[in-house]
Image 1: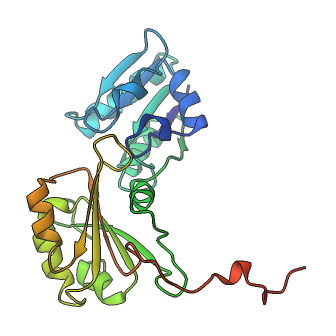
Image 2: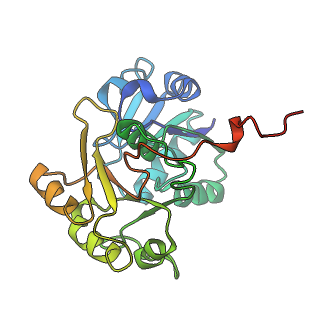
Length: 247
């Protein structure tokens, strides 16, 4: 048997990949975070599948479920919101599966930041405006950040910032960013990207915290900071330039 860590996408049930949907439809065991995975997606599990909501489970309890499925010869679809490569807690789960001799693989998904960019109708790497994207998070009430990865560092470095797990402390995050960036810096907050109840808030570092508070956005959101937010101008990419040498 195999444990497949499947990117379930940002929320819309039709934003799972074909490969991910196939893994879900053929696995007799499915582990998922009930607060993040849509019920419509769980409806793709095979009849009689064991469905385990991990929202209130510890890492050891989740590992025990995966090991038990392996002992029973059952494949597992371990659904991860967005893409398993970003803030998915996959690393600590796979370390334990390796120690237990349980085979696993990763099925990529659509990440939340990509769905947020789609909602904003913007490219995150606009030529002449911004060509670097930093995916990071707030360090409060969470695992400590490694040395050199503070908001101060990324804010000073420039480029586009995409902040996960930070909207509850939007005012504090803004205060940190303002130490290095202008109050006029464009900012957007996208909550529940791709879902029917998606919320898009636009502003600047001067007013985005007030907009977030007024909208009552408390979770399941990303903060996008930088000139690419809603930009309507920029230079053309060299990729399609007539001046570019082509074989």
